[in-house]
Length: 242
Image 1 (cartoon, rainbow, N blue to C red):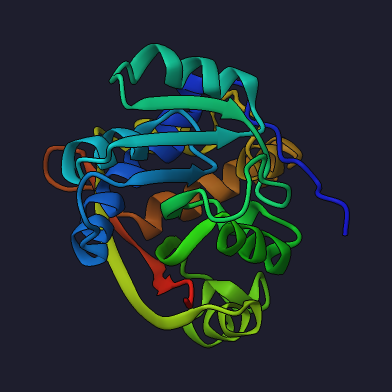
Image 2: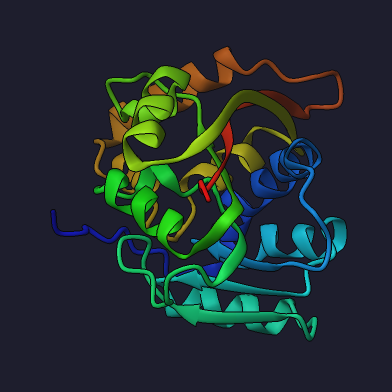
C-alpha cells in the first residue's frame, strides 16, 4: 500500500495543536513504559520534538534518533531539542532507514492514526528493534471504524500478527486547559494543514458557525472563561522475541 502523507508545514501551529497533548499523555506513558536507562532509542514520527524532550528528561537514553517526513517540523525539533544525545532525520514509518536490530527501544507518540499502512509500520518498528527490545506507543482512542488500532482489540490483533511478544495495552487519559473558547478554537483550526483544520475550512460560513456554537455548548467554560477537557489514548508496550 502506498503511504499517503499528511503534511504538517507550520511547526508552531502543530506544536500548539499536538505538542501539548504529546507532553501531557507522554509523561504518563513513559512512567507506564518504565524503560531501562542508557539505551539506544528511535522515535517514529517525532514531529516538533515535544515527546523527544520528555524521553530525554525521564528515560535517560544514551542516544535517541527522531524521524519524521516533515522537514519544517524536523527543523523546529533541531532548534528546540539541543541535547547531544538527540539526532533528527527525515524518514517514514513504513520504510525506516535503519538496519535490523539497531535499537533497544522504539516508540511512536500520537502518530499511528496518521499511517495508512499500519501493519507494515508495526513490522518495520519490530524489525529495527533488538531481540528482547521494547516497542511502545499510543494513539487517540477512537471508534474502530476510523482505525482498528485505536481500540485495544484491534491494536492487539495487529501487534500479534506482526510478531510482537509480551503485548500489554492500557488506556491513558490526560486533560488540557485553554485560556478561553477562542484559544481552544484556534488550537483546532489554526493555519497548519491538519485534517481537522482542513475539514473546518471546507465548511460553509453557516456550517462553520454552527459547529462553533455546538462546540461552545459542549465545552462549557469555567468561571474564569477557561475550558478544560480530557482525551483518552490507547497505549501499548511489547517486546521483540529473542
